Length: 93
Image (cartoon, rainbow, N blue to C red):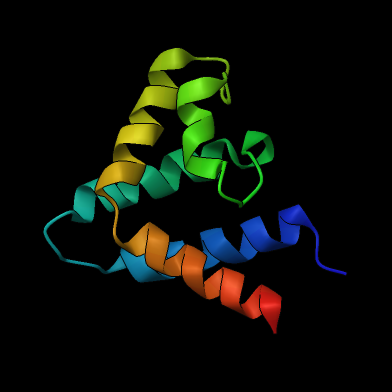
């Protein structure tokens, strides 16, 4: 049985791989998001419809400024959402 942490680990690994040598328009924002998520991975909300919203509604990291930074970076990220879609599809298989 897959756990939340298994999915998060796979998501962060995939996101790291996709952003490591990425040279697109949002390269630095994508990498900043990866590093913030990696730092706070033990505190992140479940990978469901609430994930993004949680950073605006509760103190995920116990620091409102960090939560706001993650929320803003999630808004700008295309690669994160692509990676999340891949991880969710694998979950269904």
